[in-house]
Amino acid sequence: MSETLTVANKKIRKECPPEPKDVLCSVFKRPNLVHVCFQSSGCRCSKLGTCTMCNYGTGRNISTEEMQQCMKQKVVPSLSGVSSVLLGTYGSILDQHEIPNENLEIILESIKKTKVKTVIFETHHKSVTCEILKKISSFLSGKKIIIEFGLESADKFVLENSLNKPIELESVSHTIRVIHSEGMCASANILVGAPFLSPQEQINDAINTVNWVSMQGIDSIVLFPVNVKPYTLLRELNEAGMYDVVSNWLFVETLNRIPTHILDKIALSWCSESFRMEIKDNIPPRSCNYCDRVLSEFYENFTRTETSLERRALLDVLINSNVCNCYKEVLKELMTIQEKSLEERVKRAHDWIDSNFCHND
Image (tube, rainbow, N blue to C red; front, side, top):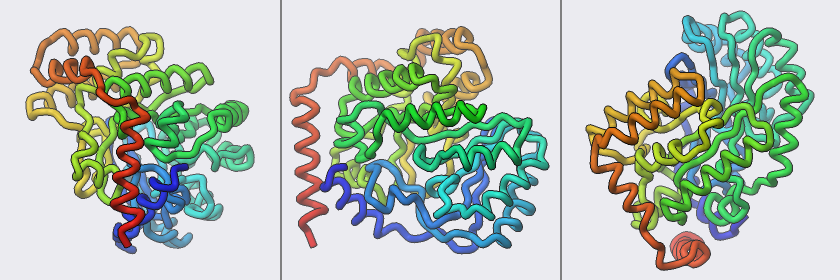
């Protein structure tokens, strides 16, 4: 990890107020999916100063009695009529420092009694063990289990110098193999819009990462554009004019350049109002009001289709429709030649961060 980014992240996150104690969980409705986020003490990686773009908040670990109440009164009733549920916390649902074993068992027992067919666990790849996967299987036999973890990028330079996310790719490959050994599906989150990269580099990084996880046998990929959240280093960079909010059309162009045979593995997140959690003061990908409507409809249709060819056809129609100059502006950005190398841009940004957050006490 970068010491400069780590110090800055810790300092900025200290200003983030904890979640209200009475909010045991939040439930978000998405197309045919319910996303449940349980209150927890927060991501252990975040406390170490990782991830320049990330902030899902901090709170407290809820008691077993509160978990039973939460599942009975809020979570289970929300699952009526949907086929999938995504279970998460402010960090990792399978991290016992956030969700103790007895609380996990309450969750599993409650989900077991519902009619949902697919259960997704959002977690850090290092919290995935054979032991915990066997526990999940013992409760949820007959349901499709997906273990979803954050990767963001498969480029070591981007991980260390842009995202400040220490990940060993061999460790990720091992996690995928462990998940498969227990008869479950593995899903990786991949980011579009890493800081300090040019628009073309942002697309290349995402597509290279999609190709890499596909080669590792990943079952599905959650692709998402960066949203600029409060109390993050990315927000500070944005306010200082050192990070541009990602265009929604840059996200679409990333989808457009993904090999067709992989498109059926892609799930979308954080790209429009229907696909993101409600976070106060969040800055979503930029587009005009007209494009917001067009792209929201496209994302809904993309999600409803299942085959790669159907999704390619949807992309072709959208790309060739000439709906707005917003897309043409993104194409111009992609053609812009950068005056400085990525290494030079990173150094300039790190120097600014160092002077503003590491030596101003």
